[in-house]
Image 1 (spheres, rainbow, N blue to C red):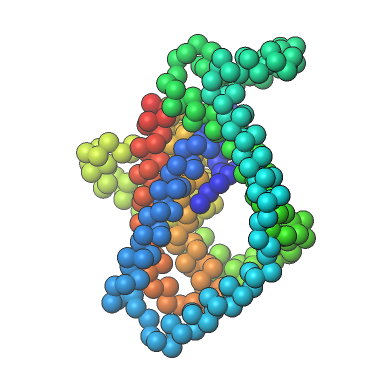
Image 2: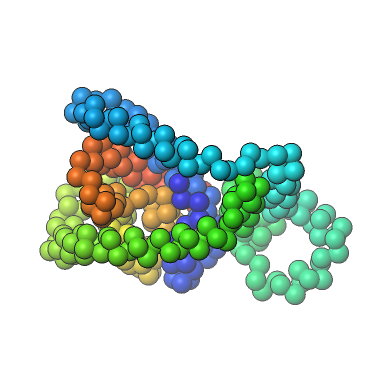
Length: 317
Protein backbone atom coordinates (compact mmCIF):
# COMPACT_ATOMS: atom_id res chain seq x y z
CA UNK A 1 0.00 0.00 0.00
CA UNK A 2 1.04 3.58 -0.64
CA UNK A 3 0.89 5.31 2.73
CA UNK A 4 2.50 8.64 1.82
CA UNK A 5 2.40 9.63 -1.90
CA UNK A 6 5.33 12.00 -1.53
CA UNK A 7 6.11 12.35 -5.24
CA UNK A 8 2.50 13.00 -6.24
CA UNK A 9 2.06 15.63 -3.50
CA UNK A 10 5.32 17.32 -4.48
CA UNK A 11 4.33 17.47 -8.15
CA UNK A 12 0.90 18.89 -7.29
CA UNK A 13 2.52 21.51 -5.10
CA UNK A 14 5.11 22.49 -7.72
CA UNK A 15 2.34 22.82 -10.31
CA UNK A 16 0.46 25.26 -8.06
CA UNK A 17 -2.52 22.96 -7.46
CA UNK A 18 -4.33 24.10 -4.27
CA UNK A 19 -4.12 21.86 -1.20
CA UNK A 20 -2.06 19.02 -2.69
CA UNK A 21 -2.30 17.06 0.59
CA UNK A 22 -5.99 16.42 -0.17
CA UNK A 23 -5.02 13.38 -2.24
CA UNK A 24 -3.87 11.59 0.94
CA UNK A 25 -7.37 10.26 1.62
CA UNK A 26 -8.10 9.37 -2.01
CA UNK A 27 -4.74 7.63 -2.48
CA UNK A 28 -5.11 5.55 0.67
CA UNK A 29 -8.65 4.57 -0.38
CA UNK A 30 -7.62 3.62 -3.93
CA UNK A 31 -4.44 1.82 -2.88
CA UNK A 32 -6.45 -0.14 -0.31
CA UNK A 33 -8.66 -1.39 -3.16
CA UNK A 34 -5.67 -2.25 -5.37
CA UNK A 35 -3.90 -4.07 -2.52
CA UNK A 36 -6.97 -6.15 -1.70
CA UNK A 37 -7.42 -7.03 -5.37
CA UNK A 38 -3.72 -7.99 -5.57
CA UNK A 39 -4.05 -10.37 -2.61
CA UNK A 40 -7.26 -11.89 -3.95
CA UNK A 41 -5.68 -12.18 -7.41
CA UNK A 42 -2.63 -14.00 -6.05
CA UNK A 43 -4.81 -16.47 -4.13
CA UNK A 44 -6.96 -17.05 -7.21
CA UNK A 45 -4.25 -17.35 -9.86
CA UNK A 46 -1.90 -19.53 -7.82
CA UNK A 47 -4.50 -22.32 -7.81
CA UNK A 48 -4.80 -22.37 -11.60
CA UNK A 49 -3.01 -25.31 -13.27
CA UNK A 50 -1.12 -23.05 -15.68
CA UNK A 51 0.62 -21.27 -12.81
CA UNK A 52 1.48 -24.26 -10.62
CA UNK A 53 5.12 -25.04 -9.91
CA UNK A 54 7.01 -28.29 -9.47
CA UNK A 55 7.21 -29.97 -6.07
CA UNK A 56 10.93 -29.28 -5.70
CA UNK A 57 10.46 -25.55 -6.13
CA UNK A 58 7.50 -25.63 -3.76
CA UNK A 59 9.66 -27.26 -1.05
CA UNK A 60 12.32 -24.59 -1.54
CA UNK A 61 9.72 -21.84 -1.10
CA UNK A 62 8.49 -23.45 2.12
CA UNK A 63 12.04 -23.54 3.49
CA UNK A 64 12.55 -19.87 2.56
CA UNK A 65 9.35 -18.94 4.41
CA UNK A 66 10.54 -20.79 7.52
CA UNK A 67 13.87 -18.95 7.43
CA UNK A 68 12.02 -15.64 7.13
CA UNK A 69 9.87 -16.48 10.14
CA UNK A 70 12.94 -17.42 12.17
CA UNK A 71 14.58 -14.13 11.25
CA UNK A 72 11.75 -12.18 12.88
CA UNK A 73 11.87 -13.97 16.22
CA UNK A 74 14.16 -11.32 17.73
CA UNK A 75 11.35 -8.77 17.96
CA UNK A 76 9.79 -8.13 21.33
CA UNK A 77 6.09 -8.48 22.00
CA UNK A 78 4.23 -5.28 22.67
CA UNK A 79 3.86 -4.94 26.44
CA UNK A 80 1.30 -2.88 28.40
CA UNK A 81 3.49 0.24 28.21
CA UNK A 82 3.80 -0.10 24.45
CA UNK A 83 0.06 -0.53 24.07
CA UNK A 84 -0.54 2.61 26.13
CA UNK A 85 1.94 4.60 24.03
CA UNK A 86 0.37 3.46 20.74
CA UNK A 87 -3.13 4.20 22.04
CA UNK A 88 -1.94 7.67 23.05
CA UNK A 89 -0.70 8.28 19.50
CA UNK A 90 -4.06 7.12 18.10
CA UNK A 91 -6.01 9.29 20.55
CA UNK A 92 -3.97 12.40 19.77
CA UNK A 93 -4.42 11.77 16.05
CA UNK A 94 -8.16 11.28 16.52
CA UNK A 95 -8.32 14.54 18.47
CA UNK A 96 -6.67 16.46 15.65
CA UNK A 97 -9.01 14.88 13.10
CA UNK A 98 -12.02 15.94 15.20
CA UNK A 99 -10.62 19.44 15.54
CA UNK A 100 -10.28 19.80 11.77
CA UNK A 101 -13.56 18.06 10.87
CA UNK A 102 -15.86 19.84 13.35
CA UNK A 103 -15.63 23.66 13.19
CA UNK A 104 -17.46 24.17 16.52
CA UNK A 105 -15.13 21.79 18.34
CA UNK A 106 -12.21 23.45 16.55
CA UNK A 107 -13.14 26.91 17.87
CA UNK A 108 -13.78 25.53 21.39
CA UNK A 109 -10.28 24.07 21.53
CA UNK A 110 -8.79 27.32 20.26
CA UNK A 111 -10.57 29.32 22.94
CA UNK A 112 -9.66 26.83 25.66
CA UNK A 113 -5.95 26.86 24.81
CA UNK A 114 -5.83 30.61 24.06
CA UNK A 115 -4.52 30.05 20.55
CA UNK A 116 -6.57 32.67 18.76
CA UNK A 117 -3.73 35.18 18.72
CA UNK A 118 -1.35 32.69 17.14
CA UNK A 119 -3.90 31.67 14.53
CA UNK A 120 -4.53 35.29 13.59
CA UNK A 121 -0.86 35.60 12.66
CA UNK A 122 -1.15 32.58 10.34
CA UNK A 123 -4.27 33.65 8.44
CA UNK A 124 -2.31 33.98 5.21
CA UNK A 125 -1.40 30.31 5.38
CA UNK A 126 -4.86 28.91 6.08
CA UNK A 127 -6.00 26.34 3.56
CA UNK A 128 -9.13 26.43 1.47
CA UNK A 129 -10.34 23.46 3.55
CA UNK A 130 -10.77 25.70 6.60
CA UNK A 131 -12.68 28.22 4.48
CA UNK A 132 -15.05 25.57 3.17
CA UNK A 133 -15.61 24.17 6.64
CA UNK A 134 -16.36 27.65 8.04
CA UNK A 135 -18.89 28.42 5.33
CA UNK A 136 -20.58 25.04 5.60
CA UNK A 137 -20.24 24.31 1.86
CA UNK A 138 -18.91 20.78 2.33
CA UNK A 139 -20.79 17.59 3.30
CA UNK A 140 -19.81 16.06 6.63
CA UNK A 141 -18.14 12.97 5.12
CA UNK A 142 -15.93 15.16 2.93
CA UNK A 143 -14.96 17.26 5.96
CA UNK A 144 -13.81 14.10 7.71
CA UNK A 145 -11.96 12.96 4.59
CA UNK A 146 -10.02 16.21 4.27
CA UNK A 147 -9.41 16.34 8.02
CA UNK A 148 -7.87 12.88 7.82
CA UNK A 149 -5.72 14.01 4.87
CA UNK A 150 -4.36 16.86 6.99
CA UNK A 151 -3.02 14.62 9.76
CA UNK A 152 -2.29 11.44 7.79
CA UNK A 153 1.37 12.12 6.99
CA UNK A 154 2.55 13.04 10.53
CA UNK A 155 0.45 10.21 11.98
CA UNK A 156 1.96 7.57 9.69
CA UNK A 157 5.52 8.69 10.41
CA UNK A 158 4.95 8.89 14.16
CA UNK A 159 2.93 5.68 14.51
CA UNK A 160 5.36 3.39 12.71
CA UNK A 161 8.42 4.86 14.40
CA UNK A 162 6.80 4.39 17.81
CA UNK A 163 5.57 0.91 16.87
CA UNK A 164 9.06 -0.16 15.81
CA UNK A 165 10.52 1.29 19.00
CA UNK A 166 8.14 -0.59 21.31
CA UNK A 167 8.94 -3.81 19.37
CA UNK A 168 12.62 -3.34 20.18
CA UNK A 169 13.72 -2.28 16.70
CA UNK A 170 16.71 0.06 16.53
CA UNK A 171 15.01 2.49 14.21
CA UNK A 172 17.96 4.71 13.27
CA UNK A 173 20.36 1.81 12.76
CA UNK A 174 17.84 -0.07 10.61
CA UNK A 175 17.22 3.04 8.53
CA UNK A 176 20.95 3.48 7.87
CA UNK A 177 21.35 -0.22 7.01
CA UNK A 178 18.43 -0.02 4.59
CA UNK A 179 19.99 3.02 2.91
CA UNK A 180 23.24 1.08 2.44
CA UNK A 181 21.38 -1.84 0.88
CA UNK A 182 19.67 0.59 -1.49
CA UNK A 183 22.98 1.41 -3.18
CA UNK A 184 23.65 -2.28 -3.80
CA UNK A 185 20.19 -2.78 -5.28
CA UNK A 186 20.68 0.23 -7.57
CA UNK A 187 23.90 -1.26 -8.98
CA UNK A 188 22.33 -4.69 -9.56
CA UNK A 189 19.26 -3.40 -11.38
CA UNK A 190 21.03 -0.85 -13.61
CA UNK A 191 21.34 -3.06 -16.77
CA UNK A 192 17.70 -4.14 -16.53
CA UNK A 193 16.62 -0.55 -15.87
CA UNK A 194 18.36 0.78 -18.98
CA UNK A 195 16.79 -1.92 -21.15
CA UNK A 196 13.32 -1.21 -19.78
CA UNK A 197 13.61 2.56 -20.26
CA UNK A 198 14.78 2.17 -23.87
CA UNK A 199 11.80 -0.08 -24.66
CA UNK A 200 9.41 2.40 -23.07
CA UNK A 201 10.90 5.32 -24.97
CA UNK A 202 10.39 3.46 -28.26
CA UNK A 203 6.79 2.61 -27.33
CA UNK A 204 5.94 6.20 -26.47
CA UNK A 205 7.92 8.17 -29.06
CA UNK A 206 6.89 5.91 -31.94
CA UNK A 207 3.27 6.98 -31.51
CA UNK A 208 2.06 3.54 -30.45
CA UNK A 209 0.78 4.95 -27.17
CA UNK A 210 -1.27 7.61 -28.99
CA UNK A 211 -2.73 5.02 -31.39
CA UNK A 212 -3.77 2.79 -28.51
CA UNK A 213 -5.37 5.76 -26.74
CA UNK A 214 -7.47 6.61 -29.80
CA UNK A 215 -8.56 2.99 -30.22
CA UNK A 216 -9.79 2.89 -26.64
CA UNK A 217 -11.61 6.22 -26.77
CA UNK A 218 -15.13 4.91 -27.73
CA UNK A 219 -15.14 2.29 -24.98
CA UNK A 220 -13.88 4.79 -22.39
CA UNK A 221 -16.56 7.31 -23.29
CA UNK A 222 -19.13 4.55 -22.83
CA UNK A 223 -18.03 3.86 -19.23
CA UNK A 224 -17.44 7.56 -18.38
CA UNK A 225 -13.69 7.13 -17.94
CA UNK A 226 -11.79 10.42 -18.56
CA UNK A 227 -10.01 10.01 -21.90
CA UNK A 228 -7.40 12.58 -20.80
CA UNK A 229 -6.15 10.11 -18.20
CA UNK A 230 -5.58 7.21 -20.60
CA UNK A 231 -1.83 7.98 -20.98
CA UNK A 232 -1.45 7.79 -17.21
CA UNK A 233 -3.42 4.54 -16.98
CA UNK A 234 -1.35 2.94 -19.76
CA UNK A 235 2.06 4.26 -18.73
CA UNK A 236 1.84 3.69 -14.97
CA UNK A 237 2.19 -0.13 -15.06
CA UNK A 238 5.17 0.25 -17.41
CA UNK A 239 7.44 2.86 -15.86
CA UNK A 240 7.61 5.11 -12.84
CA UNK A 241 9.63 7.81 -14.59
CA UNK A 242 7.42 7.63 -17.69
CA UNK A 243 4.21 7.92 -15.68
CA UNK A 244 5.75 10.77 -13.69
CA UNK A 245 6.39 12.61 -16.95
CA UNK A 246 2.77 12.02 -17.99
CA UNK A 247 1.58 13.34 -14.62
CA UNK A 248 3.66 16.50 -15.02
CA UNK A 249 2.13 17.08 -18.47
CA UNK A 250 -1.38 16.70 -17.03
CA UNK A 251 -0.69 19.00 -14.08
CA UNK A 252 0.75 21.73 -16.30
CA UNK A 253 -2.13 21.54 -18.78
CA UNK A 254 -4.28 24.56 -18.00
CA UNK A 255 -7.23 23.22 -19.98
CA UNK A 256 -7.75 20.34 -17.51
CA UNK A 257 -9.80 20.74 -14.36
CA UNK A 258 -8.37 20.35 -10.87
CA UNK A 259 -10.49 17.22 -10.42
CA UNK A 260 -8.74 15.51 -13.34
CA UNK A 261 -5.38 16.57 -11.92
CA UNK A 262 -6.21 15.20 -8.47
CA UNK A 263 -7.40 11.99 -10.15
CA UNK A 264 -4.17 11.62 -12.13
CA UNK A 265 -2.12 12.15 -8.97
CA UNK A 266 -4.26 9.58 -7.15
CA UNK A 267 -3.69 7.07 -9.97
CA UNK A 268 0.04 7.69 -9.72
CA UNK A 269 0.02 7.12 -5.98
CA UNK A 270 -2.28 4.10 -5.81
CA UNK A 271 -0.87 1.85 -8.55
CA UNK A 272 2.45 0.12 -9.19
CA UNK A 273 4.92 -0.17 -12.06
CA UNK A 274 4.17 -3.85 -12.60
CA UNK A 275 6.17 -4.45 -15.80
CA UNK A 276 9.07 -2.47 -14.36
CA UNK A 277 9.12 -4.65 -11.24
CA UNK A 278 8.97 -7.85 -13.27
CA UNK A 279 11.70 -6.81 -15.70
CA UNK A 280 14.06 -5.12 -13.26
CA UNK A 281 13.77 -6.69 -9.83
CA UNK A 282 12.94 -10.25 -10.84
CA UNK A 283 15.66 -10.11 -13.48
CA UNK A 284 18.26 -8.76 -11.04
CA UNK A 285 17.90 -11.85 -8.81
CA UNK A 286 17.67 -14.32 -11.67
CA UNK A 287 13.95 -15.16 -11.51
CA UNK A 288 12.74 -16.06 -14.99
CA UNK A 289 9.42 -17.77 -14.22
CA UNK A 290 7.30 -15.07 -12.61
CA UNK A 291 4.22 -17.31 -12.58
CA UNK A 292 1.06 -15.34 -11.74
CA UNK A 293 2.80 -12.10 -10.68
CA UNK A 294 1.96 -10.34 -13.96
CA UNK A 295 -1.73 -11.32 -13.94
CA UNK A 296 -2.22 -10.38 -10.28
CA UNK A 297 -0.26 -7.15 -10.68
CA UNK A 298 -2.23 -5.98 -13.70
CA UNK A 299 -5.51 -6.78 -11.94
CA UNK A 300 -4.38 -4.70 -8.99
CA UNK A 301 -3.37 -1.82 -11.28
CA UNK A 302 -6.74 -1.90 -13.04
CA UNK A 303 -8.53 -1.89 -9.69
CA UNK A 304 -6.43 1.04 -8.44
CA UNK A 305 -7.08 3.06 -11.59
CA UNK A 306 -10.84 2.48 -11.47
CA UNK A 307 -10.96 3.16 -7.74
CA UNK A 308 -9.01 6.41 -8.23
CA UNK A 309 -11.56 7.67 -10.77
CA UNK A 310 -14.58 6.68 -8.66
CA UNK A 311 -13.23 8.02 -5.36
CA UNK A 312 -12.02 11.31 -6.85
CA UNK A 313 -15.39 11.88 -8.52
CA UNK A 314 -17.05 11.38 -5.12
CA UNK A 315 -14.61 13.60 -3.23
CA UNK A 316 -13.77 16.36 -5.69
CA UNK A 317 -16.94 16.33 -7.77
